[in-house]
Length: 386
Ligand SMILES: [Zn+2]
Image 1 (cartoon, rainbow, N blue to C red):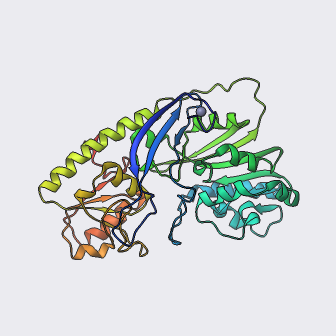
Image 2 (spheres, rainbow, N blue to C red):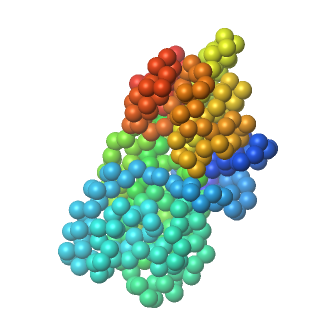
Image 3 (tube, helix red, strand yellow):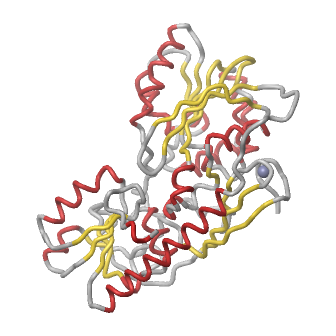
């Protein structure tokens, strides 16, 4: 097997086991299909990649209410930059609906185009479908109609691409000579160092750090000219400006080739400690539940293989209510279930910023429940697990 970015054969593999699709909620308690999660780190370009398993339609949710939520607060920063470009009569292309936070402010301006809306009338909820549509479309024809652009904005798409070469080739044709791309991506460095197992997601085949992203761009003949970092709990966001570049010599970057191995070892260690805790609590007759039925929890519960220690999963999304949680026989209930059921421990597997709010809500129903977080950065993370 080769690296998907630089095609080197020097690769290290780490098998995390089998997982269901994270949107595979079921109405009946039937067997779930599972897929191997094999993380690989290229020892040439350093990029960490997840191997694709499953059919072509693996990533398309069966339920229409499933949407991929991405953080957007920092995108306001891009707003002033785009505003300035528009004032200078520059042409701007947005790639998809994941840029909406920015383009909604400029909708009626001339010189603004949105590629996903030009190539399809459908509104896509998931990056996989957008990338697929771009991959299948004859974009040269589209280019004849809309021309080329001074600036191309693309938020939260690249890390979802199983064939980044193809995607870059496709969107590069819209870039004017001297023009620039602005990519927005999550930085995986923090979760990699922390051993945050919930970082893994079948919809993310690429896990970039700032330097490994520069390395990737080098292999596409692109140079990173500016990086802006936005601090978030769990994963920072990077806004990266990139230009076409003819490299005369190999890019001199300090690349880390052991991130994936350290991550694997750290996850294994946390798994062992957490299992000991859950096992002994279970033996004492103590009841544990999880709050949050998103993709972070799917990976967490399935990786640790702890369904036998859990009573049920709580989520107040009414669409998920009473469904079976992916990969398990655990039912999903709303918070109000706690009025009827005895619970001792609640593991929070949500955005850290929401933890206190959820704790207050649950504590108002049962003040004796003890909380733990699955996120290493949370004040509720049990540090004895390390
Ligand atoms: Zn490589």
